[in-house]
Structure formats: structure tokens, C-alpha cells
Image (cartoon, rainbow, N blue to C red):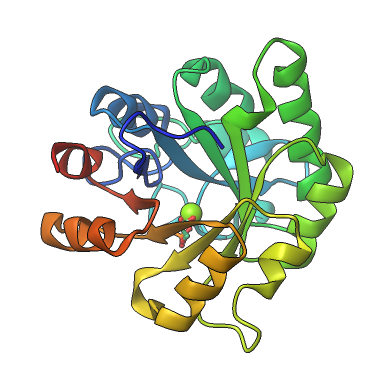
Length: 235
Ligand code: G3P
Ligand code: MG
């Protein structure tokens, strides 16, 4: 991972979810405009083979559709409104828009082939001149993330945790990860110390209050995922 000039990575969460409909091109562009050093978005593999940016497995919270993503045709999904007239973007569209301006954290939300499909797309962009270090691939699904690392060892991965494992940060070392992406709800001194001892970056999600962002920075955390990149950049 490249370091930001301030050595504290501001990662726009789902683009910049506090400012625009999450996981849309508008949110990504807004995140970059607000000064984020990186943008994170969630990617799912649709049965058609398309890689689509959506957080939930169902459509109703973030679009005007209903039911499961995988239960709808690609054409139907692409006709939906994901907020403010935005479409559900493809991974290709997101990367074309970003055009290497910031680091890209692709979070794999599905398994069963998602790793291979995402690796193929990222490699295509690397072939067009993107440095591999411009990407960070993460997932709560650590077996799928391991599969990704096996397919594309040149692309950095981050172990994404929703809690504190019994063996602390050991999974990240096993995955050859560069970072541990941990929940602010489970900040644990032992986990942080173990991650640091292993040479891992520590990125914390999802932190929206300026005072909390400042406190994490003072703790020696390496970056935050935030819906409001402007707040983190201002610190
Ligand atoms: O990758 C950090 C964060 O996005 C993980 O949680 O549920 O917002 O995808 P979630
Ligand atoms: Mg996410």
C-alpha cells in the first residue's frame, strides 16, 4: 500500500456514503473530490458474470428494486435507481472513473468465484498501467480472500474482521495481508499490538465523528474508513 502524504489513510466508505448514495459512481467521485486518499466499495458477483457494486444481498435498502440481487437479470439490475438517478455500477465502470487518482479498496461481498472474477478485472487494469499497489482487496470471507491471494499474489490484500479472533492477527499473516481492517466496535489493545508486531497496517471502520477519528490517529492507527472523508481530511 502506498502511504498518504500525511501517513494516515482516509478511506471513503462506500465512496462517500455520508454525501451521496452508497456504492455509486457519484459517491466515489464525491469521495475523491472531498480529499479521500482511498475509496472502498463492496462488490458482488452476479450469476451473469458481472461484478456489481452493492453492499446488501438484497435490493430494497439502496435501490428501487426488491428481492435478491442474484434473483434479477443483469438488465433489470442495471435499470434500477440506486439513488439520485444513479445506476448500480460495475467494477469496470468504477475503475474507469477512478482512473488511478486514489487507492481502491475492493471488498469482496460474495464467494464462489468472486475472487477469480475480481482478480481478472484488476489484472486487466494493471495491464493498462495501474500499479498493483494501487489496489487493496479485502473480505470478511477469509477463504475467498485467500483464494484471491493465490490467484493474484501481486495485489495487496487486507484481512477484514468483524470481531476479535482467538489468535488475534494471525490470520492476516497467514493471508500475507498488508493490513488488518477492523471494526471500531471491537477495538482491542491486544489485537492492535499483535497487528503492529506483525508489521500490519491497521485501518478502522466505520468512523464518522471527528473526535473519534482524531483519537484513533493519536493511538497510532494507520487510517479510517469514513462516510465523511472531509471530516478526516480536516483533522
Ligand atoms: O471494509 C470496511 C467496511 O466496509 C466493512 O463493512 O459492512 O460496511 O461492508 P461493511
Ligand atoms: Mg464494505
